[in-house]
Image 1 (tube, rainbow, N blue to C red):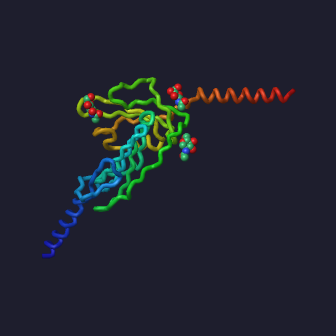
Image 2: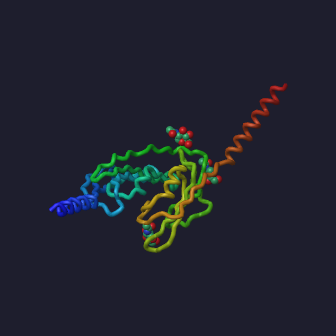
Image 3: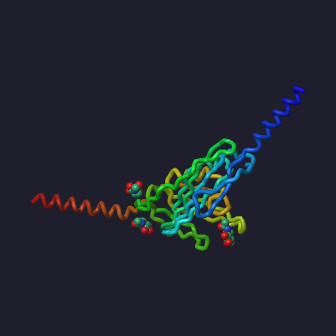
Length: 221
Ligand SMILES: *[C@@H]1O[C@H](CO)[C@@H](O)[C@H](O)[C@H]1NC(C)=O
Ligand SMILES: *[C@@H]1O[C@H](CO)[C@@H](O)[C@H](O)[C@H]1NC(C)=O
Ligand SMILES: *[C@@H]1O[C@H](CO)[C@@H](O)[C@H](O)[C@H]1NC(C)=O
């Protein structure tokens, strides 16, 4: 009898352990959705809420996703990539780690579109091949250049994605496991400090020097 009871309790414990659940839903054009509990797969012990914001010029598309997630997705709390002039991809995530928990609602981070004097190689379009000459002027806090590849599941061809990001976001990409652009995972992430628009800068210094020299020469008379 004792043994039977113990066996019963153990099986209940095992079963509750196996049925980790998360509120699951997704909705386009919204930042909230009504979720229903769904069982998670093995290795998914977090509930994730992720807000995706795609900006192209003055067009903005928002999408919310909620569901089960492995820890690697929860570690990427903010991913913001500048993929072209006025083109920004943002993903903000929040997680919680108990059965059926509700993650805090992720809020949209402010976007700084002021040029910061740095630039990166840029490559995003699937139809245009990457040109070595194509560059993107970086904005706000993004002073790093990222470069990664995604594999097209249909054509099995690799494609480079390049642009500006912050150093933190670029390093986050290195650890990121999951789909980011389309259904395929990202590979071969390279982070490099962005180059400065130094020609402009050195011209400014040259003019400043000239001005100082002029002031000095004139004040000597
Ligand atoms: C926006 O980015 C620019 C360039 O990095 C910076 O000088 C400025 O302080 C930023 N503005 C805000 C509000 O953070
Ligand atoms: C894969 O390539 C095909 C053909 O070029 C294209 O239509 C499709 O959108 C691509 N898929 C992704 C995820 O990029
Ligand atoms: C920075 O330099 C690059 C390459 O010379 C150029 O294409 C880009 O327009 C410059 N950006 C700014 C803001 O001057």
